[in-house]
Every structure is written in structure tokens, then in C-alpha cells.
Image 1 (cartoon, rainbow, N blue to C red):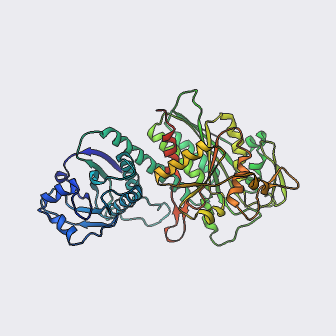
Image 2: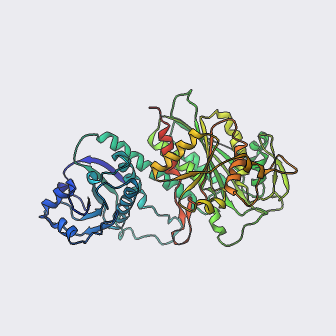
Image 3: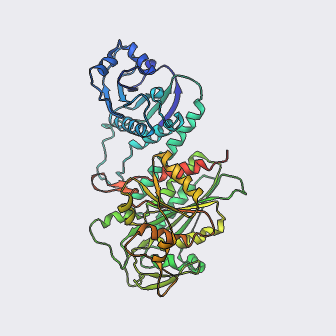
Length: 497
């Protein structure tokens, strides 16, 4: 997808589809100027009520005389100054309509969108991201694909403003939006891969592929023998039940100054989660291929960082393993020693994500990080608490938590902070080890975060539980690419000014 930002007269654009925005009175400047060229044909449609005046409602006009565009897509603003939430609906509607319109190019005259609580840079970034994302499909394993001669796909979109002023910041915003979309696509591709393809070593291969030709990005992976030498016995207690070897993947991006402390993004990469000996119910277990979506989001974020060549140091850590039942798998009641020296009583082998992440958090200490953010499809309890709209956020550092919260709001990829008090820590008490790996039936998302916090005392740390937001079930089944937008926005906010 080619996304460009340019200036010009909307009525003179030679395009298969011109996108215009209007309110109930049709007095927006660009709309009014184009309407004049059509002899008032567009305003007549508005006056007689052909376009429902709710933010994001659309009306596709197949032919309009007086202008060079072959078609016009009218989009309702809903109010004279829509909010950012309205803006998200408007942009989403444009993206989905254009992707279905059987056209190859379009021009979006966005000047008439004046949001009450966001600027034009935000709007352009959102347009670029959503338009690029709208055409996403995952048909790698379909034996019959679309007939290429019959399919017409949108390949070029110009975001048009009347003035030539401030084009460069908008071009940068469009590049950021497109890079976020590319990162989301990578995360979705990895998440949608079946577990017999997407194994821990497959993820290692994908990391090395991402680094090809990128001088600022280096990749290495630790195998199980390496981890055993480091004392990562908590991690190995999960991977030992599978014939697939676990991996700790390190993607080291050096875009900043040598002395700058890196941000570490740590992704849970359980490529299939059967629950281990604490076996999950069979219904819906196929969706446990998505238990590596935290890792997938780190891959997607690293791709966006590489594409944008951002001047910052970032380390992507991927703790990846399969969680399978076998004669040598961990059993409920087993006690293991983590890399930190703390001992863990494994009361439930299906609480395995925290067992790989805790050792990876200890490993992250060697980078002397500015901050560490782990991302994991960690608890079903998070879905009970927040549904499928908002990711859970837990942190030991208010500044980091606020930065991630703000990034989520800006990106439209929201998270909500949950508490982490001593009263929750007590739920992890064990009679036989330093801690148990579960804290009982109550506050499951919080106690999982409390568990991880015991391995993150050496740096500012935050945990994102994406169990409810990383994928969809049912007819829309598939990975969402979240929280790549949140993570990239956070990284952008950390760039040197």
C-alpha cells in the first residue's frame, strides 16, 4: 500500500474515488468547494437525507459530473467538531469502505475534519494505519485463493490538504501509521500461524529474517542448554514437556547513543498451550496457538522500529516454549528454582506463562534497562475484568504506567491500570517454597502481576495482560495485532526531543 500526503485542489484530483467529509449543513470548506463544481449535486443529497448524519456513516456515489474524480465517497462527521472517538469511527468507516469498493486508488480530502481533542498529525497517522490494515487477509493455507484477474485491490491512497504548509510533519505521521500497520500485520501473521508451523525455533528464524540487512539490529537465541547453565529452571520446567526446544530470543536494536539505556520489550511466546498436566478443556483449545501473541506484538513493534529507523535503543526479548503434557512434564506440586534463586511451587501447570517470563525478567537485568515492559496473554481473569476492549496494566513505577496508559489512549489501543498491593502478594504464599505460581480464584490477573513483580525489582517494570485483546473468536476469528499500536506509540514518546 502506497500512502502519500500532498496538497492540492480536491475538485481537480484525477482519482477513482474522492473522499469528502460533511456535516448536516454541508458548509465544510472543501466539501462546499467541490459541491460548487458539481452544481450542488452533493449538497442536494445531504439536504434530502441520503446520508445519515452519524459519525462514520458513508454514502458512495458512483458517478458525479463537474469534477475529475470517478466516484465520491461522502462521510458524515456527526458534529461540526467531532471527538477523537468519533474520528476513530470516521477513519475506520473510510478504510473499510475503500477496501471493498473495487478501486485501486483514492484521494482523501481530510481538511474538513477538525477534531476537538486531537490534532491533524494524529488524524493522518490513524488514516495511514487503518487504511493499510483494512486489506489484511491470512490465506496462506487456503488451497484456492482469489482469482487475481477478478480481484481489484486498493494500492494507492493520497491524503490531501489544500495548503502546502506543514506537509513534512504529516508525511512523517503517515510513515508512522504505515509502519504501525506493517507491524500489526506481522504480529497477526505470526499469531494466525498454526502451532505445527509456529514453533519456538520458527520464531527464532523469523527474528533472524527481520534482522537481515539491518545493521542496527542483531539477533541471538539461547537454547535449553544455555538456559540450564544460567539456572533458568523455571523456564525449563515449562519447555521440558515438549519435543520442541524452548528458546530465549534477543533482538537488540541499537538506534540511539551507545550510552543510552535501552527499553526492553518482553513477549510471552507459548506457541501452543495445552495446559500441560493441568490439561485445558478440549473446546476452544485450538485458540491456544494465540498464546504467543505477546511475543508476536514484540516482533511487530520491532519491525515498526526498524522500518522507521528510530533513534532509540530497544531490546526485544521473546520467551518462547510449548506447554505440553508428557511423562517428563512438570506436575502440580513440583518445586523449581528460578534464575533469581527464588523457589516456586507449581500448583497449576497451566499458569506457565509467568514461569517463562520470570526467568526472562531476571535475564533482562544484564541490559541495565531504562524500563521493561512485558506483554502476555497471561490470564483468563483479565477477560472477566476488562472484556475484549481493554488490556490490563500493572506496574511498579507510576511514570512508566502513566506513559503506557497515555500511549494506549493516543493510539486507540487502550489499557487500564490495576492495583498491586501487599494484600494481593499474600495470596502467593506457599507452605513449601518462596511462592506459589497461582494465587487462588480471586484477582487472578493481579496476583499474576504480583508474581512477576518479584522478578522486576531492579528496574521500572510494567506488565500488559492482553488475554482479551490479542485475538478474536467466532466468525471474526484471528489475531488483532494489538498492542502493537500502544507499544509503538510508547516508543515514539520516549524518543529524544
